[in-house]
Length: 401
Ligand SMILES: Cc1cc2nc3c(=O)[nH]c(=O)nc-3n(C[C@H](O)[C@H](O)[C@H](O)COP(=O)(O)OP(=O)(O)OC[C@H]3O[C@@H](n4cnc5c(N)ncnc54)[C@H](O)[C@@H]3O)c2cc1C
Image (cartoon, rainbow, N blue to C red; front, side):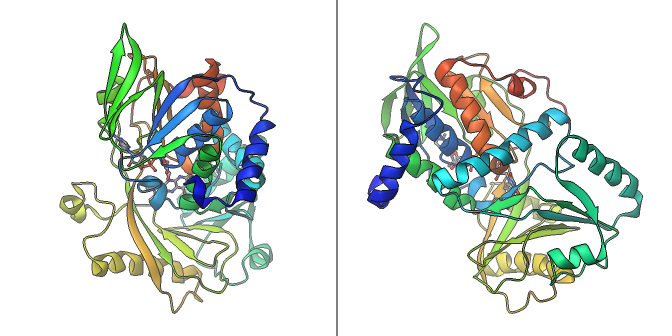
């Protein structure tokens, strides 16, 4: 992998690390990170930066699961409640902005426009937007000419309210994951795949080594960033982590001339257009209940191209209600993603109460959160510095739906 980095970029990354404000608190600490999605990748880079000896393993490969299928909207909008969770997301957005130049992360900024056609929610949304402003967000409800200026090709007439959140952006989650991993590898981290974590081995309650499909690896700490793999916490951290299924489909077009500038979160469909011209389409609700049988094995791909296209066309039809210029669309990629979703919908971050050397990192909105929680988790693992802001998100909280 390091060989794929050009020499200039490699040296830039090493130089950036030498200036790392986090210091090298973890020198000599051997950490295995299981899971090379965006969460494992960010934690791995931050740990490598702190001087840990890091090995990232993945049973399939980098960004092959949730981080491949993510819509990848980076945001701290009104639905992120309560304030502790909102603040974590705000910190996530801010950290993306700081890290983007350092790591060359591919983000298109410009904000988001969230539309609602639901008259019964008007008051609630207006009060949530006021709350957001009080919490420091650059958010407001826009109408008419202001909207036309921001999105000249979008028809907003079917909507009653449109909320503009100026801070938001969207990324290419596969490229972003790879950027974190490249930077970790440039600092000496090892990336090994396909390599499945199969067991943990303790002596006197402390971690000695992990077993994998590729052999044993000596380790002082294990990070479980295994996403929606629901059996992981029980098997490797000896901890019950209640998770629920939350599938979603994402369709990506071939590059197109620019149609939209911002993330559009519309009723039944959401879309953004990346800097490379590709439009990313997603839907709020997962595939219909009639697909339960087909989804039972948690597939990441549709059984045929034809079925995949049916889903993509359904999303496109909804999108065309707002972006009528979206014609002559060619789909390059249509995938299913499983959101890592703890039962109460909030992140789980922290050492397993049953195995203190095993650190759990499972969450939705992981794209927004990755840069910030990667930093916090690395500090907790490397220096034992417990982050106050992660207190509500510990594995031993009481989970309710
Ligand atoms: C459809 C969809 C839309 C989304 N939209 C957004 C959005 O707009 N904004 C946002 O912020 N978030 C969004 N998310 C959520 C976000 O994508 C996830 O929170 C994030 O990608 C999680 O990353 P991860 O690294 O934890 O998990 P993953 O990317 O799933 O990575 C986990 C990895 O662990 C590996 N693994 C599992 N078990 C083992 C094992 N035993 N040994 C070795 N490796 C193992 C898997 O192979 C996998 O690669 C969305 C998710 C989906 C599915």
